[in-house]
Length: 179
Image (tube, rainbow, N blue to C red; front, side, top):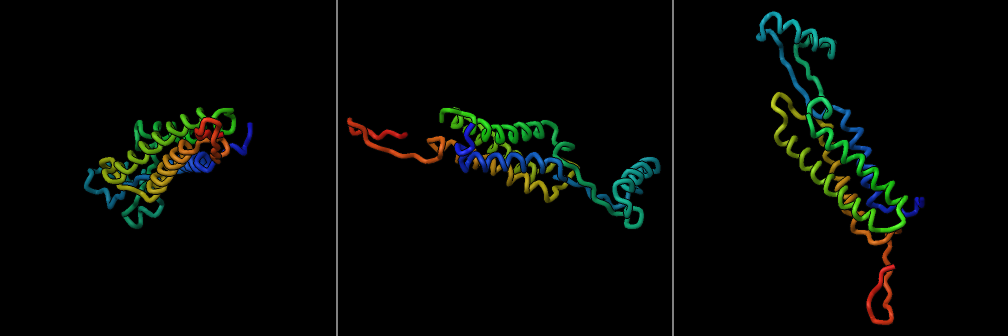
């Protein structure tokens, strides 16, 4: 294992993958409730108890906002984002442990694709949030992290050598060889 093999693309992808994983635990969506008296007596009491447990000031204001993270709202997308984050971190590990360039290039391609799809899915959820929810500010950091995974994977597959530097020389036949 040689840590000097780690290139900027793998580092960006790994840091973005860890950031995506952390941000998934922060509120991406929220519900703002203004009074619950029109729900009926029993439902209003239950809703008020739940809201007061999460926000002690609810009783005095009558308005509260409850946040929900990606794990609580997104049914299968959260697992896709988890796989994206893990693959991004694995790209850095594979690059450090690999003896050839072909493995990190293939892993970089997979990372770029997963990061791009994740960023697109998050962007769709920003434009069209799940029905009862509004968006919370942390979803934008999730979008940036997913885009970082895609960019890091793309940068990784663009590099041709383990050290990130390509040197060329002409051989006896006049062809360029990268080494």
